[in-house]
Length: 458
Image (cartoon, rainbow, N blue to C red; front, side, top):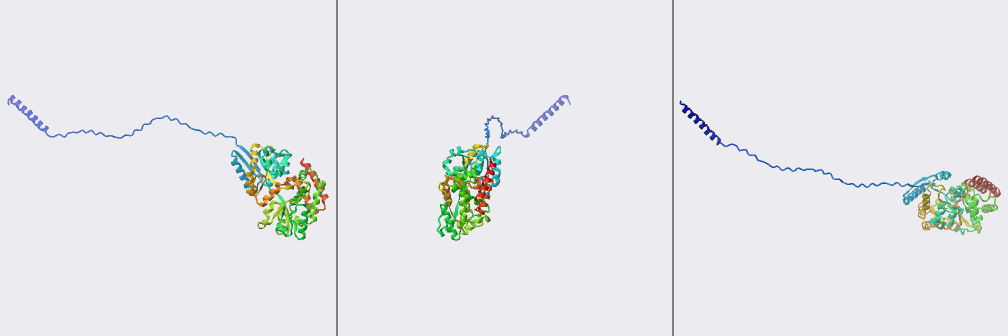
């Protein structure tokens, strides 16, 4: 084959391959589609921004003020008075919340033993309960009690308190005490017995002796009394001495300034003897306590009893309307009238560490509001005349009027004189009761005791 023919065949083969390739290209080829999807995604973006904040902080700074203090000791140890005393302190603190009260309640007899130690210590209590009369004056004369005359002026107490209570709170014209409660002594009697025998309450000594005679003639014991405990006889001595020689002489005697062998004292025992001569007293009185002797009066066997108003506590309720009282009869009309009205109250020691607070407390307990509280709570009689008399029973109102009319108020023999003299004196009264004819011997013994006792007190 010629070279020309060979080149032709090869060319045809290339052409054929091209055609085949073109045919193959006509077959559908898959189309690639690229789709763009836009996805919107919510993205929470927390942006922390620093903000400068000005904080104003209020700081309350407690300013500690010095606490005011009152130290108060009392002898109200019995259950009911104790509760009333606690309530009293609460009332005071409600009125004066800035005063802290350090309150101590001591048993009555223990308190009487401790009071000298209180008053002579370098830091005594600021306020104390105590008894009016010589029990108070004993400490006043030794410079242990604060003069509160300025308070009496400021509070108007010289006008608000009956003059008897003013005298009871005073020494040499100055006031050292505020009296707050009291009870009276009188002759208690059964009105039904008096009415039965046509008797009226005696007002004079002769009338009293006549009443005794009438009762004895009708088989009634004029006076019951129990002297097993000697103080009941001392009540008779007090009233006879005041009615014959006057309360001023009696007070001086209690203070050791008058002699027991003075002729005026003989008159007292001579009048006392007349009562024995007229058979005025129950027989064998020393066998009975005062409550046991009261039975004779309750039973209607005795008509009268010289006693404090606490007699009502022991008298049967069903006989309450058949118990009354009258003032101890007048013997010497030329002397002032003195009455027994044992009185309690408060005072401030001379060296009280907190005198201002003590005076606040004394003014508080002397007020009519506080005294009315005690009158209602404990049945005590108030000394401040601004306490309305309407809160009391008719019997209490009668007793109040009797005391308000008195010129002097005394406390009782064993309160008005010193404890050693009271012991000697009451022993002497019992000797007299056993034998009323021994007047001179008894007076001599009393005078010797007075000299010894008061010499030791100097």
